[in-house]
Length: 149
Image 1 (tube, one colour):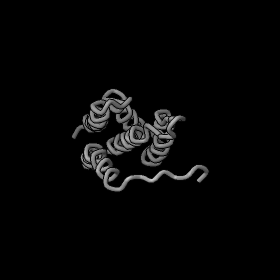
Image 2 (cartoon, helix red, strand yellow; image 1 turned 30 degrees about the vertical axis):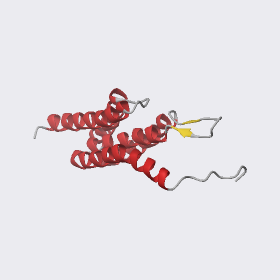
Image 3 (cartoon, helix red, strand yellow; image 1 turned 180 degrees about the vertical axis):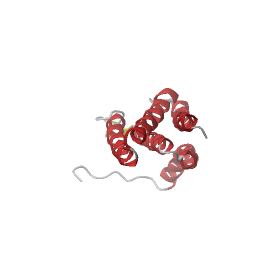
Image 4 (cartoon, rainbow, N blue to C red; image 1 turned 45 degrees about the vertical axis):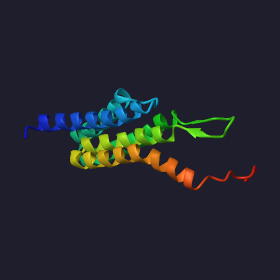
């Protein structure tokens, strides 16, 4: 396969995989959607591909470290604690941002088939996880911790 076409396919796969996760988040009314997650996937893949092109595998591993560290700051920006109820919101959204970056990294390295398997697993978690949590909460109610614990 033509090397330019191969790299383009990596970027397209990362963008589409990120967009699929973003669509799930958007359909659930979350602050991230197709554009945000598509861009996270694309940007992550682009950084890794650039690292491979510039310096080979050594630079790619440093690029991966930078992406995973940097994306943590983006994810942290969506986590909010409600001071009235002490509930934390945005953890799943932050986790999906981090996951989307990892999927983009995988595509950037050429492991887009692995990223597709991970995408399917993540969509199962996102689709089934909420209802399972509600069932578990109804079956085994959470006992609040006493103040100062």
